[in-house]
Structure formats: structure tokens, C-alpha cells
Length: 184
Image 1: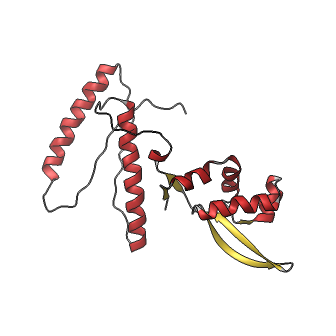
Image 2: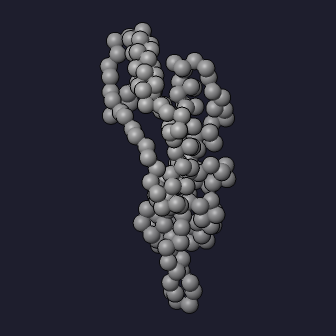
Image 3: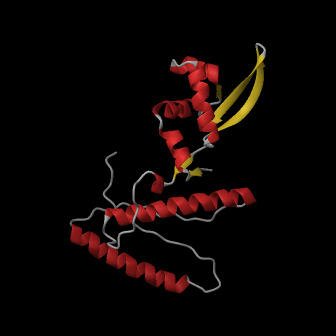
């Protein structure tokens, strides 16, 4: 389950270059001496960064073992985490223009934040969060075709929502967006 990181200090902890390298190595459990050897850093430096990552909730203790008269801690990166997009941008003010990239980013940030929190709550209760994802690719001839498609999709979705919406039902949010495809 992805963990939502929505505390600014945790984000700052994750974004340091040394800490990103540590997190990458900690996909598999490792101790500070093992990480120091792998990364060419001092054990004290690694321990400093590991404490910061642990305090931020980005790594977890897997085991403690006795080694040469001291206790060695074995850590691993917490499985998948999502950084609240609102924390890495100065301003996610919602733009009213539904064709503006800022509007899409704001809607996507809201979805990431909401779904991550609800997923964590559902997992804590031992249940699954019911979601649905629809992904398609389309090739539009012009910006006008994108606008026409968006208007038609909006009308179709509104008709569909009208047929299935019931006052006693559980609220769901549907966000549909389009953006240019990234090169692969």
C-alpha cells in the first residue's frame, strides 16, 4: 500500500540526494555498515541519514541483531510512498479553466491525496478501497477536436451519472482528463 507523505519535513527528508540513494538501496533490507560499504560513505553519515528517514516514516525496522558486541539494526524502505503534490509546488490554486494544465494538476493532486488517505484508512480497517480506473489513448487532429471531445464526454458522463446516482448511495468522485502522451 502506498503511504501518503503529506508532512513537509518528510518530503525534505526524502528529497536529499544521499537519502534518495539510501532509499533506492533499501528496497532490500540492509544495515548501516552494509549501506556505507555499498555507497562509499562513512557509517556515521549513513546512520545520520537513516535516523532522519526513519523519523520521517520512510524506512522501517526489519530486525535487530547482535554483531561484535553491538546491536545492528536492519532497515528497509517502506513499500511505495506518494508525496502529496501540494507539498512540492508553491501554489496549487485551482484554475477555473478546465483546459488549463494547472486545473488538471490540481485535480490530480486532490485525487492522489484523497485516495492515498482513504486507502490507508481502509487497510487499517482490514478492508479494500473500491476504485475504478479507465485509461484510453486517443489521437486528436486539433485543439478544437479536444474541446469537442471534452464537451461530448462531459455530456455522456453526466447522462450516465444521472442514471446511476441515488441519494442513499455512497459518494464517488470521477475525474477524467486528457494530456499529450509522453514519449515512451
